[in-house]
Image 1 (cartoon, rainbow, N blue to C red):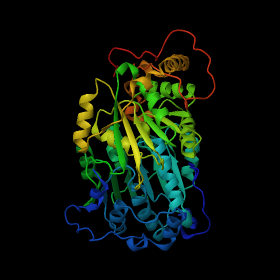
Image 2: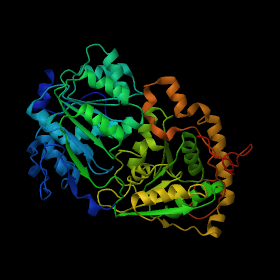
Image 3: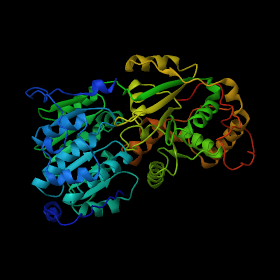
Image 4: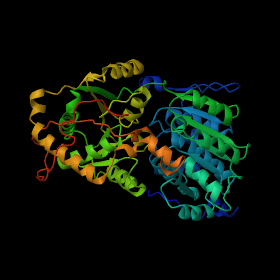
Length: 510
């Protein structure tokens, strides 16, 4: 379903007419209610109706082919329907969005009015996804949503807000902009506040803006906070914004599902490009969709260009793309028009990409929780999946930390040197051409880092970009070989001097 900033009627209904006013075994829902809350039910209900969801909402759920509640939904929905504040801890892919959307829509059906709920999300893409899911789940009751994010026209968004949507999904910076600058807009009638991916909201320095927003909304409200991890910052936000919340926790802090097969591929630092191409080529026949995570904007654009030059259908997703380009990249990947998405960490949390077969960590994450979030893009909802992490001689300690945190030893993927060596010449030439393209486009470099953006804008449109847009480093690469499957059009020979082919030495700049 296409997302829109402007709310749209879904046919006659009470709501529409009111707008004028470590393993799955451990993933059993372990609802631990804080303070005076009660114990979780002995068994998990197998239908949404059994959770107390109205038939009108159940009709929309059936249309979306949700077969039964996930553990986080089974535990969170009844608590939220009872009027309690909720803090939900669950990993990406657990169904958190429906866990808070369904109770809000049911409350909206019972008490229809505009400005009913506001959902805060750390990234633009996640905000659009949440808005789409609200529209889908609320299709039978005529819900209207407005998606308010940076990078889009303020006037268009002001018009959407003037049409009095029931649900506002927003990134914090842009929402605060409208509260300060859009005449007539306020959140005084707000009944529900949701902070999704709260740990990332706070990691991205949205804390001061959230503090301001909390002063602009009614104190008498229901609040739900969802997070993958319970950090010190999240705990502080919980104390400041929630009243006697029920704590619903699914799984452990650091865990991966048993349907995920996790590999590492050990390689020389200077040949990362070469081994990546070998890996992509090796999995091309069995993987319909692959996500490759990189650390910097520069490498995101360069790796996507490298793969396209070699005939692989790759598309980049990073913070220096325009909003329309980012949405187009996601749409192409989700529709199957491009089978490889090269992304910075902006895409690693919360994005609804339903069927990723392989996740590749081109740069090993520096934190175990980031590894969990990245590989959580595959093996979702009981499906199988694979992840492969490229490990250089400088990354061994990071790999060991990740294995300790997830209590799982990764398996050696294995790449026969003689087969890899066959690709070397072709990959080196493609890497030079890719680097030349990136230089011409002016991507990466000293001005593209997170620090530079912070100097420019504070809470501006690009603050929802996250840690994937660090200053570009020399991730190097080089090596290649012509083999079957790496095909496509014959490319012209690159001109000029080198680029990312040799990859080479020196430390990465941070």
